[in-house]
Amino acid sequence: MKPSTLLMGLCATQALAMPGMESAMAEIQARDDFFLEARSTDLLGDLIGGVLTAVGNIIKAILQGSSAVGDGATYTAPGSLGSDACKNDALCAWSYIVKDMSTAFVGAVGCTDAARGAIRQGFHDASTWDKNSPYGGADGSLLLSDELTRPENRGLGAIGDQTKAWYNTYNQYGLSMADIIQTAAKVAVVSCPGGPRIRAFAGRRDDSRAGPTDMLPSPFQDAQSLIDLFVAKTFSAADLIALLGAHSTSKQNFVDPSRAGTPQDSDPGVWDTRFYSETLTSDNTTILVFPSDRNLATFSQTRAQWNSFAGAGGQIRWAPAFASAYFRMSMLGVDNMNQLTEITRVIPLPR
Ligand code: HEM
Image (cartoon, rainbow, N blue to C red; front, side):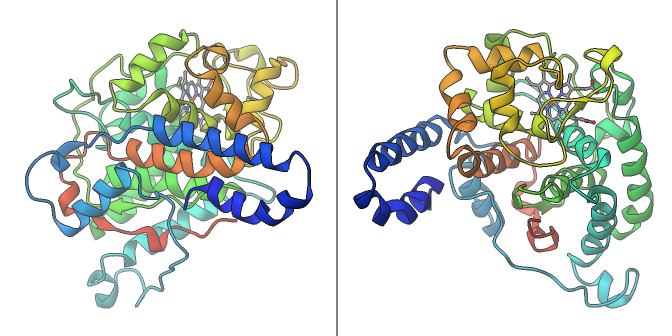
């Protein structure tokens, strides 16, 4: 069900009694329809042409509009890590690594520096791919090659070291670096209060070749070139605006090093839409607004989408929109989607 439909259902009775409510509901519906019309439904990798497996059909449906938010199903490991019972169950080792990740990502109040690093890391591994790339994408190469030395990856050293330590422990149980990076990003999102539980699949192949260059955005880029960069990766402009909400949890160090540690909204431990509204204020004293974010917030093609997340009802629209756009991100460059296994049940429930 569309989030607006849910909201509208809840409000329907009251609307009859409250003047103005009907027009507010119509506005929310219109904004939601705008997003649903504007999101990408492009297929990727081995889902294009050919016969699909059952899991291939599920992933295809999510890329084309089914919800990317997991249901409430959970998982209990049948034995300890390394036991025969655990080795014979595809989700078992995943349940153990996810516990380690949660310990690193859940803070006393909100999510931690490691969580924000893991969300950015998932983006930077996957984003070395576009429609013209013969390789790259969510393939683990960020940590299996020298990609981390590229300037755009500054700041990812600490989470990179932590992720390599997880890989060293869990690769013997069949977990690939590519999957560990994408799963960490999804565990990190749901570790932030308000973050959605994004559906997760495992079985990606690793590639130790450094991915193609010039695939990541700059915080000083103009809106049109940013849209073009993401369209080449099969995202729509609306998807890009949904993805940027990850800066709700961000703290910059290198855009303005003299203000290292300054967040991009006033509560960086929480997965909320203050980032969208506070970017519009351009308050560069308590927070630091990236020029790229400001450019997209005010650009003719994207400002309606930005305002729909910044305004009333924004959170209810943004969380599923982010989930669907990030789900697509986690599949860039993956060409064996027909052979993946769904592991959503091991992802923690929302806080
Ligand atoms: C126009 C596109 C984007 C640009 C220009 C951009 C740029 C940046 C920059 C410059 C930083 C700060 C790095 C530092 O100084 O330490 C940052 C942080 C971050 N970005 Fe983005 N980003 C973009 C899109 C995304 C996307 C798509 C995601 C994830 C879905 C994302 C997630 C994050 C997170 C979580 C952080 C915080 C990292 C931390 O605090 O350690 N960004 N981004």
